[in-house]
Length: 424
Ligand code: NAD
Image (cartoon, rainbow, N blue to C red):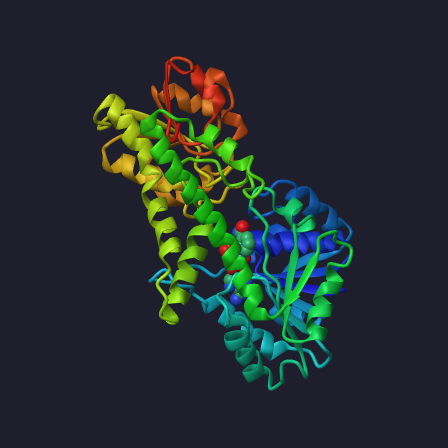
């Protein structure tokens, strides 16, 4: 099928490359011409495991190309996926400006023949029906359901394993406005092994928020258990192991540490809290999950200060910048809170990350030192904070003779002269 994918970030580019690798003909659209050039040269503008190889292959087979021309893309395709960003607004609620822009433009270029517009971006319940459809209808003069189809198909991929997650998801959720829309999208996933849940757009939108809110709450829950375990001399990981032996509790997302970050969990939980306010509901559990996550990263610094006293003028090595391993994404990374706090306290910060130093430079400029190789970074100081669990940090040699405060449970770090974990 001819597919256009609008927005070529983590979700859009992975969606485009994966559909192209499955034999579809894909045009990726972005307003950022540098991004488009990179993609056409086979250089992914983001780091994601396996993406470069896949992109090169689909370009070679002429299954994918990128453009800034939305008109050409929409006119030449049967299905358009919207995968532009939906960042937090000023009050933490969702900022729909990119969705609205794309909605209007798609309407302008909607072809005469049947075309299905698919919302893949994460949007609060009601957005597809009450924002997107009226915008497309107003600029196209056409009617949803009669002249064109619309569906909401949330994406559950995780950065760092995005391709694997896209191709082998636990489930596929499709919320179409009618059967024709739903079945057109379902056809694209025909060869996937995952079960397909068919529902309406609002429910599909809410399933995405329920999933992310549940997982974020699970992380804050285990961090809270960990914060209680620590002063009691209990290892929260042993507790989580025992907890997960209960068949009602899945073991994933039970790693206590310095909290969640990334482009999705913080913004999505805030967005659904904002949506709840619109219907006069005050979400207590979700607010608590967010509140705990605000301060959790700073516990690592408190541990260091309790041990060494003031950090003013001290060299501190931060191991890890990306919000998790396997990505260069720094959005809402716990490292940002930790480094900002260290700088405020007058520490001299040396940070190591195998892929995220470029992104980190955009945030910290020359206020900190950057190292891709952790062996170089650890030469700079005695106090080490482990912030991201990269495999590159699983090396006892990095820690010998050092004082380590671990936010991610790296066992090799126990080779340090002094070792302490944040929740163990
Ligand atoms: P991103 O910020 O990495 O990429 C968005 C892209 O859209 C950018 O390249 C931007 O230039 C482009 N864009 C903006 N306006 C445009 C326009 N008018 N026309 C064409 N392109 C435009 O975003 P992302 O992380 O890929 O997330 C996209 C959506 O998917 C968000 O709603 C997000 O919540 C959701 N999501 C993200 C993840 C994830 O792990 N990143 C996972 C699941 C769902």
